[in-house]
Length: 160
Image 1 (tube, helix red, strand yellow):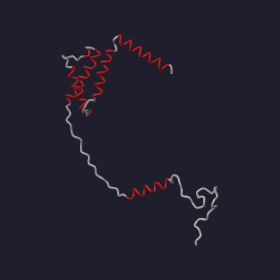
Image 2 (spheres, one colour):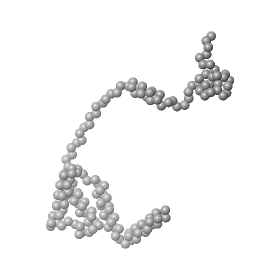
Image 3 (cartoon, rainbow, N blue to C red):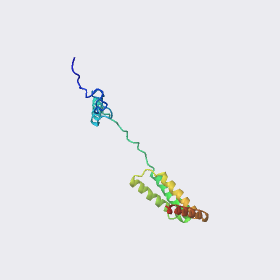
Image 4 (tube, rainbow, N blue to C red):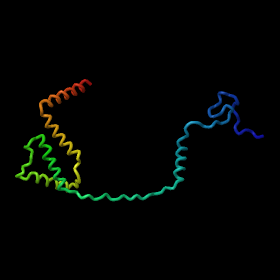
């Protein structure tokens, strides 16, 4: 009969040192493993699989012809018509002097030089809605409601 590999500390000692069973033999470790072992396991798994490089070809974007005349006409119309809602007919271009044509050509040259292919519709919508709202803000009934709302907000934030 051979001697035990691990000599028992105290067979029935309830105060046995940590890491040992009650009979004195080494206990299995519990809890999280050291991080170095985790990384070694991950490295061994990733090294086992060969890496395959894939070639991805990206198609060139389609070339879209830009109609700079239509784009500049839209910008000129936005420039003249939206502020005219708020400022009145004085903002309208003089047809005799050809102001609309001059402004449209200026927009066209700018768009060609900068490579602008489209106007963001959000900008146009913001200008139109803003000019509509500003024209209505000059009416007395709306001005009184706006002033009450502004004073309410001032009182609300001044108490803090």
